[in-house]
Length: 105
Image 1: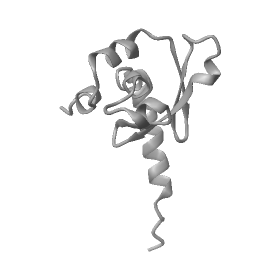
Image 2: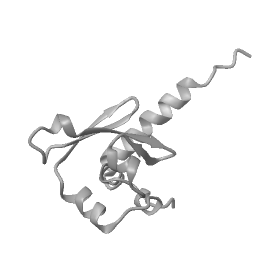
Image 3: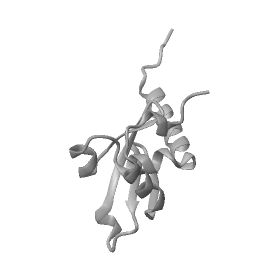
């Protein structure tokens, strides 16, 4: 049985707690998962793209993911919600498969 995605991410307890209780909204897009934090007065200013690689939320466009060590709360929020991560992984597999050249032999 493969390890849970959360077991493969480096994160802090504080980040894990925030990923669990903040009011995140998720939207599947071709590039990954758009994560909006509806806890803020203007959620559209707190919207970031989480990219999926090899079944794992691999990167996020938020400042914390760029400037701090370990996974940000947006990546962790996707990792702990299988109903978000699994379809995002499916989209990635389809995208990766369709990007391969088709053999004409």
